[in-house]
Image 1 (tube, one colour):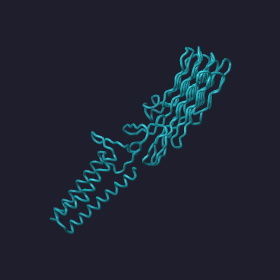
Image 2: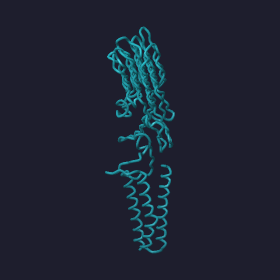
Image 3: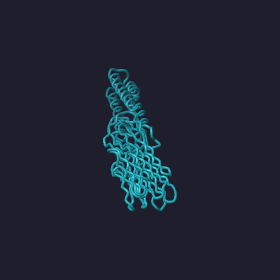
Length: 378
């Protein structure tokens, strides 16, 4: 009789432990699970990406566990300068400021994310482009790109990267200054050509008659964040200045400037922080191109920050559902079913009472672990 009792007890524990280990290995049940949420979430085989666009500004990145993440913060780009006088050109808009931290320490709390809006291009009739607005994550605060100068001998505006200077016949405007570590200055406008807006990696090009005035180059982060964000992984290119020659925007989303063909300057690509293109008056007043909106990207090592949905076999189960239900079932078996089976097989005896007590203690311990886990998660 005693052998039957012991055998039943051991068999029950064996089944429970085997099921627990099987589910743990398959990825359905975790002994320790934390969830990060917020923004637009994507993932690959190694990392989870939380991407915040301008329309999500003011929302939270909810971190469930202390650790380190990689963060890219890009402010909104400045607008290009407008034109209102024949043969005078506006400067290109400066790119939004950029900060990257490859090992940013986070704790279990909510982080408010601010994503900068673009600066509007200067309205036709000789108006400066407007500065972009700042993007912020934690201690990382980037400055919006400087607006391009209006046509004439006017200076570009300061910003994350500075806006390009405007131009008039035989006179010029200087480019605006950029912010240290975040960007570069804008180019100088000269003789019918507006200066290019500054970019993350390079200053805007100074105007030279007939040569075109390109925006400064942005930075390539594709090795870290891939090519699915920004302009194929590049961010914060400056806008081209208006000129008699076509002026390219800087790589990384910068808008191209207008030229003597009478075209409209290009706006920057949104979600890059690029600067807008500067205008050139040929037959009528022209407005500058808009800057690009900013972006904030947070990359988490998935093994450190377990996402809310995990794959198990051919299906997908949420961590909270599986963690809540399965341990409760196992605990109920240990607390109720095993003691009842022991008594049914062996009656009331010292050995059945001892084994029942052991089973109940294990079950209660499992419930306690579950309670602590849920408390840490939420």
